[in-house]
Length: 258
Ligand code: SF4
Image 1 (cartoon, rainbow, N blue to C red):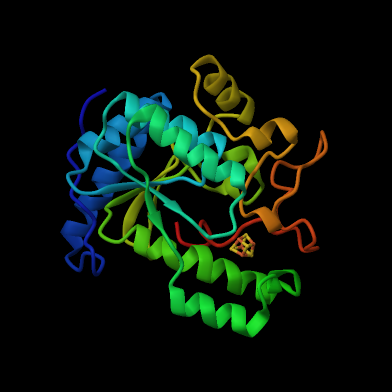
Image 2 (cartoon, protein in one colour; image 1 turned 60 degrees about the vertical axis):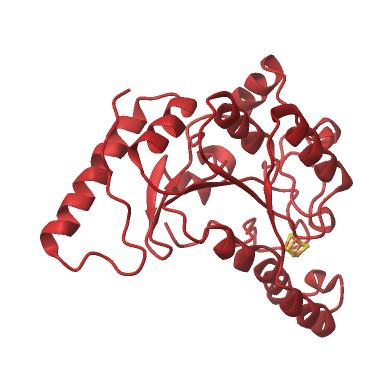
């Protein structure tokens, strides 16, 4: 695994100089090619070696996030660990959060919704107004997740996520490494080409703490009022916003940016 020198993306504007832009592209292409042949923990380590600035990993304490966090801790990598606490998570998720910090001896930075925006949202549509329509659901996700994510990634040159390609048709269109053109940062999905079973097997074999709800049929776990257990054979993300009929199972964190 050899280090690839890569300049940090410009934080403000795309490179205006054509040659500079070409060099940036070549560096990214080299990094993408190098990452493809590596294991997920090697991918994370190579990104850390190759990029001088801040790298942020966000976790919702799903099994993928837990395994990635295990590799970061095991390799003692300098990576900012962040979670978005929507205020509506399952008690089991908070238990896992605390257990994870104890197990690995680290602190996971919590980002909360903007207080004024949350008060306005709840005043307008009620505490559970997200059940009323796709628009009210999107409004809730925007206040509790999407806007906080922008603050979580502030100053980061790269973002590590637990996204896997086989989680949904939408997610299959992602890749191991992409460039988020809106946020001007690299986005690494180190488990993109792993199956859920492979992730679960790794977690079990290595004693990685996981959410107790997985044993009760909860596969993809988000906010408590918007997540249900699924039956065998159902799509992995079918338990998210199950009352909506358009089949969309994204809250907006991964939409239309990479
Ligand atoms: Fe709100 Fe549900 Fe989205 Fe959580 S998942 S932010 S409770 S709509």
